[in-house]
Amino acid sequence: MITDQPSAPQHNRDIGEVWSAKHASELPFATATYWLQVPAIRARYNYKATGVPNVAWYDYWMRRCFSGKMPVERTLSIGCGQGSLELDLAQLRTFRHCDAYDIAPGAIEAAKLHAAARGVTSVNFMVSDANTIQLPRQTYDCIWFDMSLHHIEALEHLCQQVARALKPDGVVILNEYVGANRFDFPARQKEIMRAAFLLLPQQARRFLGNAADAPLYLDDMYFPDPQAVAEADPSEAIRSADILNVLAEHLDIVVQRNLGGTLLQYVLNNIAGNFHNGDAKTQAILNLLFEMEDRLIDVGELSSDFMLIVARRKDQAGQPFPVGDDR
Image (cartoon, rainbow, N blue to C red; front, side, top):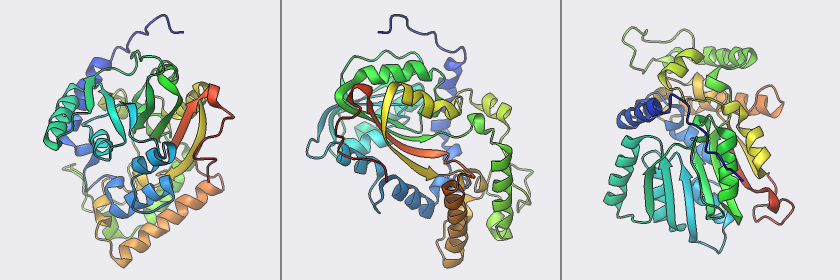
């Protein structure tokens, strides 16, 4: 039982402001620069999460976990941003009610406007810091994290809260970055990333970011500076490398699927828009990157930086689970 509420990290008020600004600009996820905005990559990523084409990962896993039981009564989303996932799930009629939290007031205000525009009344959007949140016991059928848990410093506290908030047959579904903290990649991963980048033809390396002094074509790839990452957003990948271990301490992980991204996330940073046209040459280059990433993860030379995870309460370990084992 938790008797003391942990104190919030000193910088968390600033994080709310940072993410309010990010959600207002959407620059970090711009079509021209962000890897998951490339349609072929997004389709591959989703297929790796589900094993079937043309079905969104969140729709697929809700139906796998709650076959014949939807809409479930109550769900929770932590780090909801502007609410796109929650509103999609609402319109898919997967739940009767959803509580959705985010630390950024600007994002929550935007989420409420989006909900009103789409006529969704079943989602309660609220501002809250997940590092200190206190959740009600045995309340939720499903709890989601969509690229949000890697922004949490107090992982132990939050995972404990999540475990106690699940109903006995509830599940946690995560689509998450679990790679190096602050994107401080190991030397071997950097070596492989640079080699993959230098294989790209010059036209595919045309710079599409917003740096005024950047060359027209990149001759080498950019690696993030961990200190600069922390200064830009103190929450970014703050303990991402700890997620799997902490999660396993508090929950029973029943599905764990590698989604890749280990090369693609930064090899295509600031050049992703060059891969949108979908022609044969572009697809051939992407296929080369896909094959490199998959095979190097398969043989253990790289780890998957992104994962789809389904987990449940530890007291349910050993009990039948509708999705079975991982592929």
